Length: 138
Image (cartoon, rainbow, N blue to C red; front, side):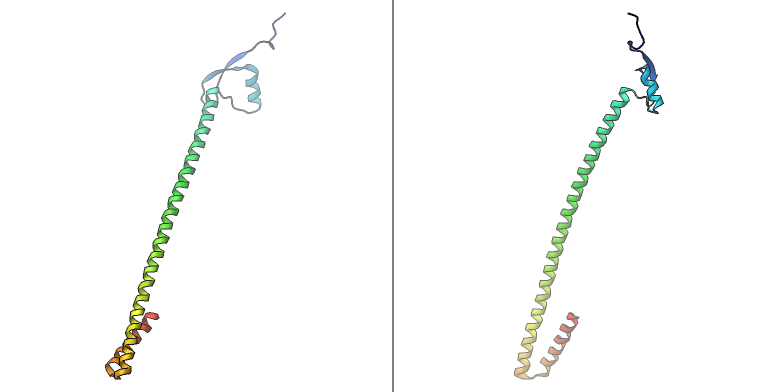
């Protein structure tokens, strides 16, 4: 039987479009790729591209994980701040109640003394206390 070109594997040396390194390729494939405006790429560049994509996905995943960790720590700090604000507001509120309670107790004592003695000194003290309470409320 005569040898025909279709039965033979004909290779040619071509340069990779990315790295410019030479490699062997079937003669017909090169023409098809050039006609379809495709790059002629060697196996090393293909493997490198796959590895690069895999690494990019790994980096993206690690960035997403670290972003989640940062968000969690921010929420934790925010919760602590909210709790401390609530505690501070509670203490401040209790202090105000304590002050008003003391003022009201003093005013009751003064009213009793005024009722018993009708002394001008107690009346003046009561007026001052009353004005002080009005200023605190407004």
